Image (tube, rainbow, N blue to C red; front, side, top):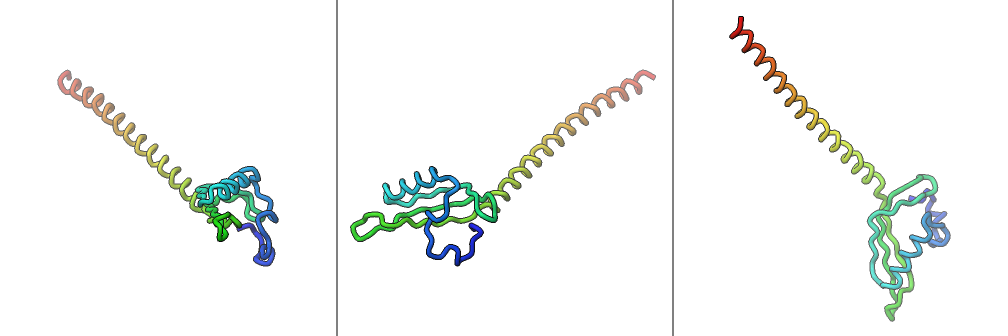
Length: 129
């Protein structure tokens, strides 16, 4: 996900990879450590090395020692970039479908009005030769 090999990541921690949003990341890490509870971040946009901008679903949880004090922070991120792009395409398709239905209804109503005008003209011509 970061564009690094396993060897590049082995033995490293999050401080070895500067976050793209350091204040946001530090605030969220502080929340997890202070609250001692799981934190779910549904969408987080990050800049990665080789892949550019990605959207992640991240969960952070403190790892507690025997006394219940947070000792470590475990973060798990899932790349949801492709899913978000598909959702955007679906939303765009739904908008286009709605516009198409609206245009069809307007055309149908316009056609009905024209038919009434044409029928009225025909009725006058038949009754007034």
